[in-house]
View 1 (cartoon, helix red, strand yellow):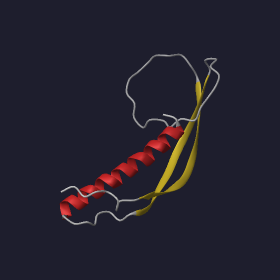
View 2: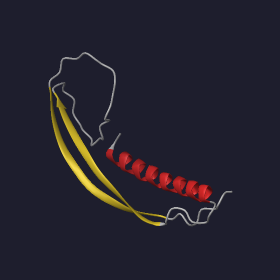
View 3: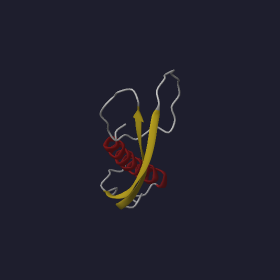
View 4: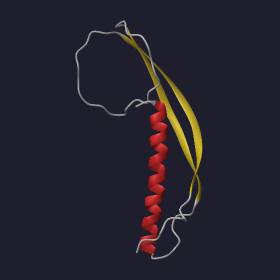
Length: 103
């Protein structure tokens, strides 16, 4: 997954989670107040890993590496890996008070 896709998907999932949680709180409390609308701080701390393999391939891109992967292959290559970190946060305004109440 490329870095921009990871960031976009994370923001989408946080927003969807807050909105779904708001609907749940309103439904369970039988009230018109749920999760408070406002700004949500999303902190990112991403490890960027670059690999150089001696296979003659050229090119590159910034990708977010999966934490877990399974499977195996046999190959005779030598590689060098470097890791850098990117830390930043995004302030997202999620309005929850415009959601219709479903009873």
